[in-house]
Length: 216
Image (cartoon, rainbow, N blue to C red):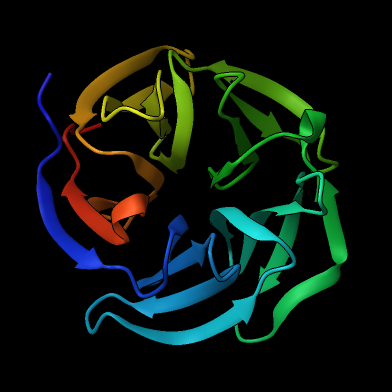
């Protein structure tokens, strides 16, 4: 199994970059330090808009013209999914609890929202009411997620303090999971721009774009 092929490595526009999502040629990023969600122009690598999140923005995904942001809130770090409307801000009335009060990364396949649970090593497909409709098992803990063409792609690891991370693919039809590349740093989040993946080397305050290593 080969390591990922890095295409670019950019200094983060905010410390401790965490969540990532791609939308119509722009990149969304959440910072664990500032607790702000940023809209970034990837060509100029500049911030186009920003908004304070209601908690720590762990995971981000795009649903049509909106976003969903998984936030850790309160002193107990309760996990909620929030609705973000670009250019307007967070919808204060939308506050969906995560199943079992845990989760960090989000994905959307055009029909369903998916929440990943790092330590439970699962991806949960949710119905419109927020209930669990299907469970996908991961071979490792999950640090990033996005869904591309019927496959759930994950950043995974068995020991988060090491540099032994993987790009893992789960087939949505069969549930079969497979590691397809190694990631030689402590990666967080995953987004796909139509050609390549994006992730964060969070502790280095860098964002990395890398080639899609398969053709599925």
